[in-house]
Length: 407
Image 1 (cartoon, rainbow, N blue to C red):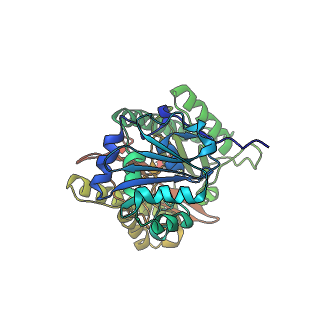
Image 2: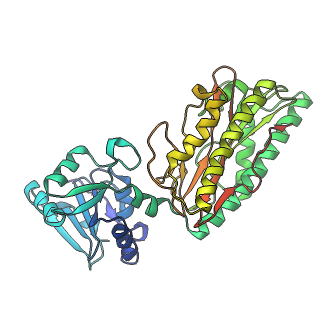
């Protein structure tokens, strides 16, 4: 049997290129590191693969060493050289056959150095914690001190371009308009006596996405009253067709964007007819929690003071705790949004599910979406998006939801 073939390095898709090398090295230097050591085996490390532009499956272990000064070095297996044809000719490429050579090459470059790897102490930031413990042992045995690459990941995977921000803002206004029209449609149908179903409204929203030139790989979510108590509820064509009737609370969670740019992600709440006192009570707590997180982030950013994702989560969670709904707020306050993924690799607003220790640095985007979910009764969430500037905070959409929509 012939040896199986690996992936390939594609310079056009790589974050690390001869043009970007100096910028990457400046960031390494700013964090007091001697280099960034990238590791992958069979697609284990999506961060390394994206940085290097690796495509397909790499069937043998690879390292790439990006020193603070000088040219990067790839350490690859001898039978998997073809996939590395895209590796720049001016950069070194070393081939190994035995594990002895492999480990000696690693030690040659990292011994005595402080190196960044996709590692998070205690698995505090899971999206960064991609390198197996055994590989960390190998690198430490080679004489290196391993530090987390978490802040480097934020810098090179989660920072939006100016074009990306402009695209996101356009998408955000489309979503806000579509959500308002969807609520109006649900209300009119309920009053007419021929109510629309959750799934029927989902399909209508998808049509509006297409007409607006934005797209999403799945969703959106329309959930009524008790169904909204499931944060990941998604109505489908094969399940029960729940109609939206007078008296229902309706949650619409929709996300979409222009291809290749950061998506917008919003959640809106409405009541068909007069809202119940319980719905109003929960809405008031959730919207106040959202605003507490926004106020803290804005004050820190505008004041030039550092803020971590966990602190924003604490601010929102504290409001809901004081309102008596702590046990019903079962997820983080927000997630990273980057150009590659709606749930991105940058800092989340989280001190519940994980310990988000990373800073909300200029250029990153994320959602702010506290929620309360009371099983069998109702669910309420309010979601907006943010982008951090040098001394300003952009919140999308322009007009966020201040009060329950009543249709």
